[in-house]
Length: 193
Image (cartoon, rainbow, N blue to C red; front, side):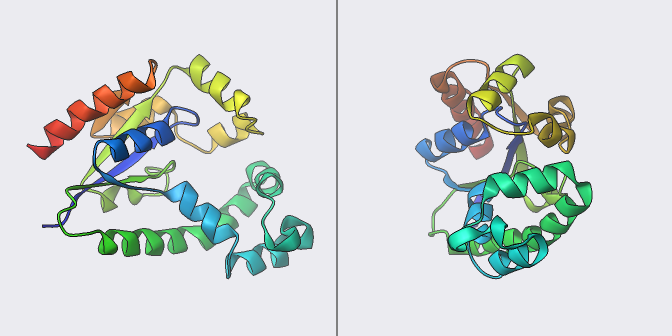
């Protein structure tokens, strides 16, 4: 029997990565679409496409300068659309390959997709989970991580309330990692029945 697939999303610094790690500790197979994007950016064909479009400074020494790409795309919607058109099909292929490679008996597979609803990928999964956190906590986390252009990044995402209203399950993440894992453990038990 194929695993139950979960699309995991949330706003910037809501705790998606922490939730993904907690799902893994609870026995789910997990993958981050952001991690897939990072791998793809430093390999062909994307490496050449980015350098051709934005110049060699965007990929010195064969590695993409993500901060430079971020400055370009988050300040210019046309460039962001171009980049997403390059990346999204490759990410979809990689995730489909990953799902197909899971070992027999895997009961739950969780894919972290920050732009799950914005990209229309929510229909790909059996169910969806949104991690939500109060705005002051999210902003503090984002700034502590040095995320540049936080306002521009948030402007391209639907707000947390909209993500929560679209998701089949919502998990609040204003407490500790242990609180988050307890909430997700309860959700996993519910989904397994």
